[in-house]
Length: 408
Image (tube, rainbow, N blue to C red):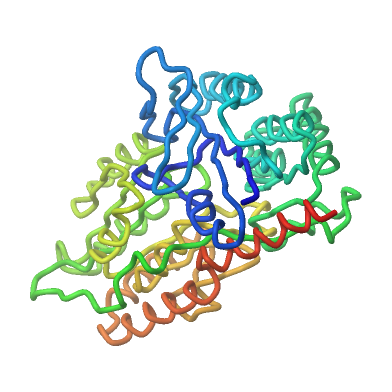
């Protein structure tokens, strides 16, 4: 069995709250001849949960057959200095030989760019062990930060991140991208397009029940649901304002919005809901990934919202969107991304990002659909992700990429 190390700062075990991309890929890789070990930070993103006991610097444990090496990192809140120190602590400690001494020698190492310093650590480890390095590009740093207004083009930090980004591209044997058009960003930097491999996020469709309509009793509210991060890119403030407008056009309590998850903007969103006097909006804590299928069954429809940002021209690959579709409910898709799985599957309604009137009308339209109409859309989404985003299929594509690296 060939060995793979995956460095992902924010990797999540099955019982954690968040995306489990690498666990799901690792769980399916053995049937293709690969065993993966995931090297991740001990603090859980958004919740801040500490996985290690006081005094523990690292721990190797097995989660449903997948080894996780947890590396101690300090707790932080928000996107300030604390988060930067958390990133650096993970990246530096991952390079300490005593942390990885107990792992089987790798044949390939993947560094995943939740942030580029984790990928840098992966590249340096690959050089130490003289094995191929794969750069997994989840977010286009620093371009995403520039497009979100958090970095300025021409600043010293931007210059340094661009230099690091280009170095990582050049060091990699293959570049795995999650965004379908990321090659349009990478190839102009002088990187051969044939080195770029698209492996999007996926979903464990088998964890979801067979599609069936939600049974509502007379007087039960129509439940619109969102679960996931409450951050800048999600633009959930416009969703709250749309709910305010929609509530004026229906009887009291007819439509309920459930917002489940955490993130830096959650307190501000809660204050906005209070200011808007929204009676039918609930803010709920994140749930473990394993509880998502049951949670999804409690919805009548989902809403997926992104702000209008240039970076989305390279496409999206959202865990929560595929969970929404696997949950077999219609999806209101509010985004101008270059790819639109909801439209491809005919599984919901698409509206432009930031268009308050259009989002309001979409909420009213989906709530006024007949149960058979919503069931048809939900089934279409479920079938689409089963055919295009199953983790068994995606693990096979990753295994082909790994084999190509070691056969060079």
